[in-house]
Length: 134
Image (cartoon, rainbow, N blue to C red; front, side):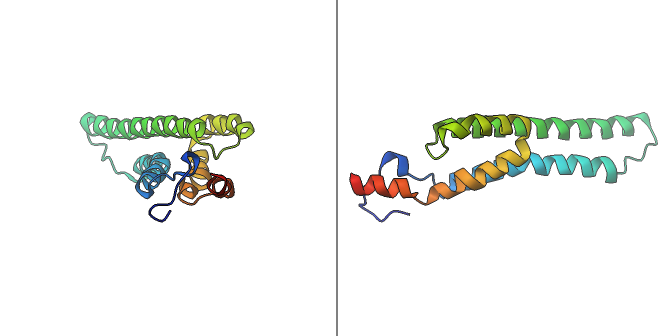
């Protein structure tokens, strides 16, 4: 972090550690929810003794799948917004990252977080040059 009283350029202001951790959890949440839904589908013992048991099992599975899809949609939106607001992603890489976030959101959001969200806590070389010039 920057020492107290150090002038910080607007591009060098890091996200808070808490925000970065929350975004990391958001990147992992859809993967975790999908794994839970798959595990529930294969391991869950619905005890198909009645129609109510089958309906309850199916409803739970559908609810888990919908929750995972909604979490993934939120993650895509948050990371796409971060992608276009961040000055750390090169302009020519933004369309590639956007396509990756749309068509392969689970791995792309985790990789994007590792490369661009978590490292924002440390200033880059261009940030240091901006501080020295200003």
